[in-house]
Figure (cartoon, rainbow, N blue to C red):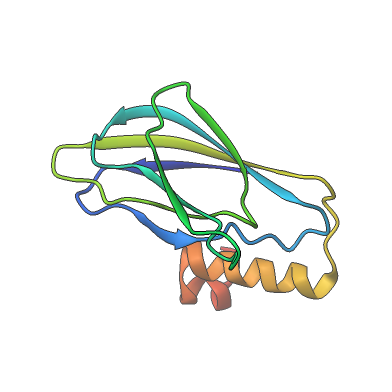
Length: 129
């Protein structure tokens, strides 16, 4: 799957999260910068966040046009910092899974979660038009 993210309004951002996958295989996120007129808008990764034996390390990345970042979205805690006035950023994200199988209950949960997150509560119960 893929998604095109347009950051055009001041404050546009994505808070810290994992790219949670319900597939049976590993999930890798591929992030490609397409447009970066946003010095303040960065990809922030917190390495070793859940490893008590290592100190957490923060990594801050810019994604210039053509840059590609590949990571295990299930394992890396990451965010995109807020856009400021007059800035613009466009990024393409893609997903690669090593096994595209998903159990029926996880499929239902995944579909409901995505419907709610992307289209709102009304869309979950309204169905297709």
